[in-house]
Amino acid sequence: MKFALKLLKSLEDSGQGICVFSKDLVDLLSEFTPKSFDDFSSRSYYFWKTHKRPIPLSVAIKIMEIKNLKSVEVEYFSIKGGNKIKFPDCENDAFCYILGVILGDGCLVHSVRGKRNSWYVQITSNSREKINYLSGLIWELFEVEVSVCDYDNYHDLYIFSKPLSMILANKYEIPIGLKYEKIKVPEVVRLRKSFRKSFIKGVFECDGNIYNYRGKKSVQLRQKSRRFLIDVREICEDVGVSFREPYYDKANNSWVLWTCKRSVVDNFIKKIGGFKIRLP
Image (cartoon, rainbow, N blue to C red):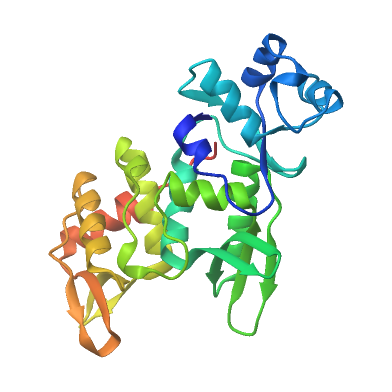
């Protein structure tokens, strides 16, 4: 996937440095010498050039600035050569589905304890089968193993990756922490109809359900953020599923998209419930 210079600059923080594996940058290294980069040895330069070690972000940014590159293809991100994580060649249905899941039952966490600076993605589910499915999908997308903690009534999935967490925050505008009022539909979701369906499916599988109400089948999607549900309602409209405006449920302190109108329920089940997520 191509990453913009502005985004790569936003990935720098006080913790361990992020590095990149990028053939585009390796091909440009021949135009530089080891002395072009402060604080790095000839040995480091040799390993970057032979693709045996990733290029530090500071070096990647310097090359891009000198060569006036606005973006560059990155095959993998890494922390000092370990914990490699890739991104798909481009955004796809599975990626947008995962974005929906994270905004439904997940969050990004940045924890600083003394010298320990941790970044990770956390997703919670009461279904071990769902966690297993997500684990496989995450491997297909990012080639990264997840960690799972099983409790009596729920399961926590963790992706310990600083690059992934920071990119989700800085490029896809997923807030760090439990900041319900700041969540929004990422702009990438609006690019294609299948992206919108994938994202809605991800959110609905976390925060929605289909149930019987006074003998009628009903659909509801519940969230803390009214603004987010208005955005979701808008992209539902884009794929042909029309909900009314969300209403406030005082008893549960949440906002709800809801309908028992048969045509809308049937349409939702057909277009969202029956939609198959295509693997990358």
